[in-house]
Length: 308
Image (cartoon, rainbow, N blue to C red; front, top):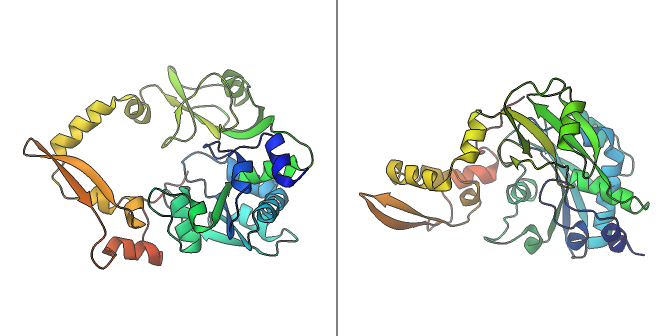
């Protein structure tokens, strides 16, 4: 049985949250493989801890993906501030052909299109995926599961962070399907009443169901009246109305958009004088704005991540 079939039989999916089948990416041909260890959501610690404790399996998984795709180079991308993880990865034997790329502390470093540009200087086409430019991106947790799959280990458990309004924040190994309530109890119990549990980070996470999934990176507990919860529960129609009443067409939101900074077109409808007007923002005739030039030189980033 080849590597791709072993990964498929083990049920390995993207561990970073998207859940895309790992074997599907490994079935393609690529020039580069990039390991995403940026973990830019606040409060989550699982990926940096996995890279520290299981650095050898991250490298092993990277080599397997490179072998399957025919990639000539692998890059493990993680934030420079993850000192223990950087040291652990640098000390791994047999890391030939695999580089370590240290990212600055910015959001959204975990977005794979921003990540590819930062690491390789290549821009994923508008509406495209990294494979369109010869790149396969895998989460570091996915690489560990790939390494274990060739030893016959199926994905039945996953590591995840339990944080927020709990007594003992921790990173735990949980069976897929485990009760969220049991994991909150394992973290010492909840300190807020009433509360809401997010599956994923405060930025991109959604309210958790009752059980752990293969894609559950974290369980973040927040008071029910926390501003993050209020925002997530706010109807989209209310946001649209607020935008129409407040927007003055300054286009700063477009200039700051990570996709626009990569050169992608941004289009939106704004309300000017009570009349909706479609406005399409494109690159200038020179192909760059000041902001985009600074992004590509690595001297500017989107909103800096807050350290926790």
